[in-house]
Image (cartoon, rainbow, N blue to C red; front, side, top):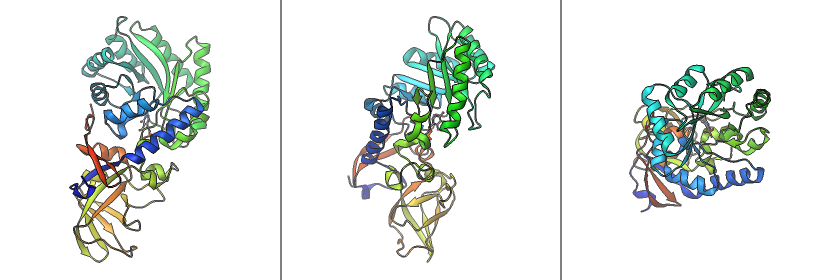
Length: 353
Ligand SMILES: Cc1ncc(COP(=O)(O)O)c(C=O)c1O
């Protein structure tokens, strides 16, 4: 099938670009002896995850339990879930998943560890890493001392195994994260609890990830598709972006305005990464600005464009944030050039619990 036959709005994945993006990252990881554990939140497709593992990834990372269950159903066998899992319902599901795959989770509080410790026993122990806030300002213990205290609590629980340290580093913050983790590693070694794994990750720093001297695993996610945000942060160019949203021009109310059938429910409403403008990059009209989104409409400012689209024309839009787009659609079209190889159902889409 030709891509012209795909109805809109629809997500197209350029497989040549996917393969180039994966190969580039894996070559860097191999050259620097840094195992990759890709985050699947970008594609949410077991077949892409299997491709990443076949290329050399040591396993995968999932953000949500439901996402991890769908990946296990899809044949993935080694899963890191860097999240505080809380509450009886989720802990039961976590135990069931732990019986099916090689699994590790994180904790950044005594309460989370206590929940794991109460649910897991010696017969099927759970591996737990301590999440560290190395500057990103999200989850994570705040000091090396707190990391040691939590590691001790984990190691003392019969049904838990202390697995090491995990961080989601500040963007552009390899050195800062590394200094933090090095101090925590030294403190843990002094406490008799050397961390087996030190997991860091993020696409913006992927191609300098090996500068993190204590990192033992790296978790890039968006690198597989890339998007405008990653390009703005310095990772590759728009020509590396594999995910586009195909859209139809449904209206041309004025000479300077076009309206596409991709609103926030198809393109996602993440703001433009500076210095870029607008809610996406229209490949065929690079000077156009997607200036506003409502749920099912994208309003495009054409005032800077020489050529302008007509009603009924289709275009392809590189979104600001590919991962959120993936979560909005039931399926993607895997393409090569202008041919559709096939459709793939996004099995982890919407698995928010
Ligand atoms: C815990 C964790 N690890 C890894 C990643 C991957 O980051 P990126 O999409 O920048 O590659 C994310 C992204 O949100 C994350 O939250």
